[in-house]
Image (tube, rainbow, N blue to C red):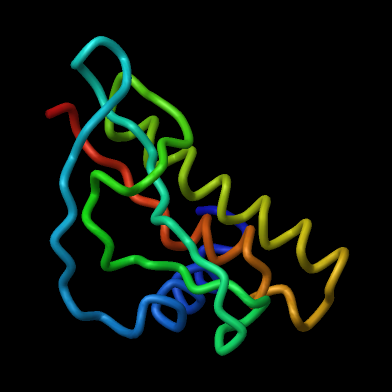
Length: 116
């Protein structure tokens, strides 16, 4: 189990607004086979932490690819590692304000999607 698994799950629930089901597509970047890790777009908005609004409800066509993988397991492992790494780095730089940092919110809202 990852070192921050419980904290990550709590942060995901906090940032995503709860346990409500989301429609998530599955997809890659390796010649139409595999999986890709994508993150939602964000726009400047002073009403949100750090001045950016993560648009998790945006159509998947507007999401940005972060990485590509052969299997869903590789993608999910990378997604969790990226969440842990972004939290660790943000904690070093910002302490208790880490959860509001754009890098953390991007990592928490990223999804693995399969090839179209």
